Amino acid sequence: MTDETPQEESKKASGYHGGSVDSVISVEEVNRQATAMAEPISLEQLDALAGNKSHVSIKNLVAGYGQMEILHDLDLRVGKGQSLCLIGPNGAGKSTILHAIFGFNRIFSGSIEINTDGVTKNVTQMTPNQKLAEAGIAYILQDKSIFPNMTVEENLWMGGFLKNKPQEAKEAAEKVFDKYDRLANRRKHKAGVLSGGERRLLEISRALVMNPEILLVDEPSIGLEPRFIDMVFDILDDLQNTEGKTIIMVEQNAKKGLEFADIGYVLVSGQLAIAGTGDELLQNPKVGELFLGG
Image 1 (tube, rainbow, N blue to C red):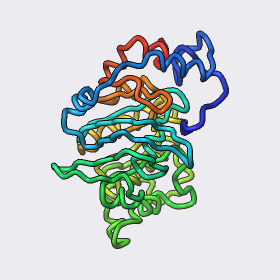
Image 2 (image 1 turned 60 degrees about the horizontal axis):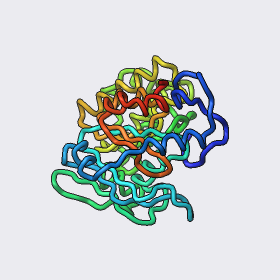
Image 3 (image 1 turned 90 degrees about the vertical axis):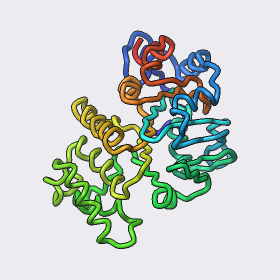
């Protein structure tokens, strides 16, 4: 579930999205408490978290849908080969950031830049296809984005739809099969019969066919059993630390996401409220009380 429209049902006060159930408060109260814990954040702090060498830079971004602004003068920095986890209440703008980076929504002002090997490219107004083919940005959708009536193999081929020749997509798919035996053993199976964890692996693998440098990952754990959640995060860890992918994710399980990520941002009402390393946010009592189960 994306987070653009705040929901009216009540949420758990202690451990929003996956914690204890000691008390229940409204979404409005969650937002009020999250706003109250906001801290001053400088660009120097964001740059330092990114190792003073940003791979992805968002500057003063105002973005949303139609005439509605969701993000307000947002800044973001993440270094090459780093991972950033975005957490926050519903309606905070977390998925809107991913959509803006990939070109799924309207950008009113500000910029999105990719720096690769010292060359900076402004990708703000590029289409999603251009961002995938020319800037190496891939979006891994939430659950249920596979084609269930196609085979695993055919799903992977679809990931290479921007390749110049179909054979190039097939060759890239073979590299994925070489990496993941679990998929290779099911290459001729209809994707609809895969387990939840296998489907998520297929969704991630399909994005890898274009060999992107930057992965935008939307709710990797949603709908999965705990054993599959661990498998998915192991895969993402390998992609970051073995293959050098830069990962920006939205994760409903804030504790799991921050344990994984190098950097954590707390978003509230389309603005950055807290930024730090993943470990710093895990140890922050304000974050812990509202998002991590106390």
